[in-house]
Amino acid sequence: MKNVLIINSSLNAEQGNSAKLTKHLAQHLSAKYQSNVHTVNLYAGAISHLSGAEMQAWMTDANDRSPEQKALAQISDSYIEQVLAADTIVLGMPMYNFGVPSTFKAWVDRIARAGVTFQYTAEGPVGLLKNKKVIVVAARGSIYQGTPLDTQTTYLSDFFAFLGLQDIDFVYAEGLAMPAKDESMAAAISQLEEY
Ligand SMILES: Cc1cc2nc3c(=O)[nH]c(=O)nc-3n(C[C@H](O)[C@H](O)[C@H](O)COP(=O)(O)O)c2cc1C
Picture: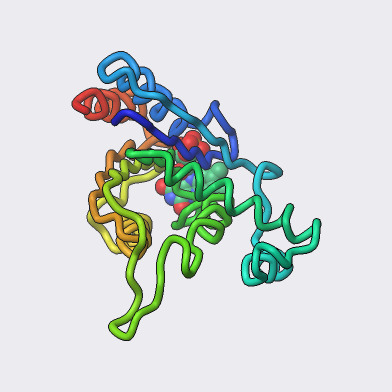
């Protein structure tokens, strides 16, 4: 846990419950392992939807890209560089309308790049990332862990496994819109302090 990348997706940026928890984890890891922590906040305006022009820029040979395509390709390149530089990826993951935040999905669309982070072979897709731990800090208004309504756990496990990362943990702070919010946050914090 020397180089930690935190991707927060709360629409409230660092004020979100998930971001408060990932900040706590960052402080804990910095104190315990002297980790270098890089935090990215994906809120509306900080990241846009992937466009056709941006994808076209990826598919154009780097030497043949126009200045506009170079700038477009750089968006995904820099998110991928951040992932490559990390040994631990921490996701501040709110549940919004039974799924992941749309800003996080826009990040996912930048990270999954054929020939860069995965490739198709005769046997099917193969992830090109390795030796990274993923920790998901999941914040929810209600309680869904272990039920079919928790679409995030399977989706995130499947997505990172597709890229080659199978080592994924989930720390849940659920019921945050319910009376026991403080207990739920405290339980998540003590779980995070076990790292
Ligand atoms: C747009 C929106 C949609 C939400 N949808 C759900 C939901 O489907 N299920 C749920 O349990 N909580 C839902 N919530 C509550 C959030 O999961 C809860 O506020 C959590 O703390 C969000 O994380 P954050 O504080 O880091 O943004 C929603 C909140 C917002 C703002």
